[in-house]
Length: 475
Image 1 (tube, rainbow, N blue to C red):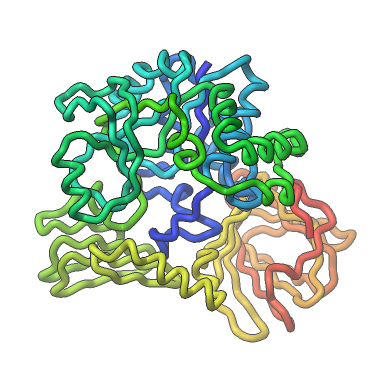
Image 2: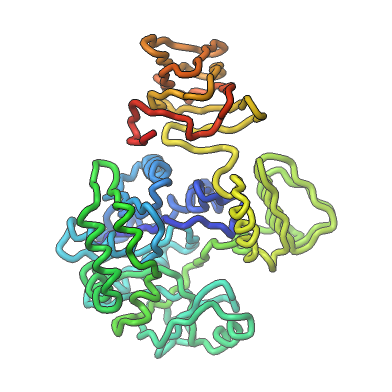
């Protein structure tokens, strides 16, 4: 049995403003019609002995993960919720402990949720090649044959490298792991033929990983066993207790285990891999026009070359630019040189220091029942466009500081207002006074769309008192 473990806990700050803390890059369709997470899960389909996945994600993202799996008609073995990020080593450890409930000692295939792999056949072949090594007690990492001196990746040096002469999928002993290099050092690595990009993908048995974690990082191993033993397991999610998990040391699998173990091996892989960690990476995997521009959305250009331009909401026009990135969303626009996109995280850091909401959410905010988008806002009113999925229901709730007006523009709404329950159809409306218990439901088979006008002294999303909620959310 091989269990894929999909790590989906990152925030993707270098892909701001498209990637936000509550809707990060792994949930976005950046390269095709599927999201990064969906592509990751789909590429495991068809591998012999492969099960449905275990997913590890931030607790705030749980409903997006569940919904994206439902769209694929895939039921995960489990979805493990991290109340706080502690890096990859603890996440994998908790997943390994849970995997042991499905088999005596399953093989785990560890995959980050934000990678691109073009050659699925070569990816499958690499996995089939190294399965025996994993079963026999090796901790396998996949090393990508480098196509250039990339400074954004860590590197792996093999003790007996194949000089990238076509001997991919061999299993080689690891000489060392090295940090992200500067440009000159990276050129030397690539020229030597001794180094591979560190992909962050791994394969090993659950018990051997846990044993090596116990030997190399005993405090972390003990914390993970404790948090898993006290996890709350319901039919949909495995919820880790925040205080216990917060006490766990935070470290990557590379630092905690792979750099310390004697059992590390590397499998060279040439499968069109890319870690979509920056806008320049999306440019590199895009399809350029005759002037080298990669364009998404409504874009017009004049005398512009080698740019990546993403228009999400509005027309974007550019004149006389070269080697630039332009990303337009409803509430933020990024303009950067292609060789400076790694510094986008500096902008995110500044915005966070000022508590700006643009790093946290988009103007369109996704909820387990659908989504809402802010249309207009002032001191004492706010207008939203709300979409409720077929069969979905908001919580039974009340507000202390605001009243609401609902106007249905598409579909049918079932409205609860105190003891009264009634239907609204297109062009009908209702008023929810301050302090009245209410619920909105979509009993139909098409999305319900309505305009909500809020008015009151305080319009924050935390002014919600929930009495009933099918999604298990508290007030």
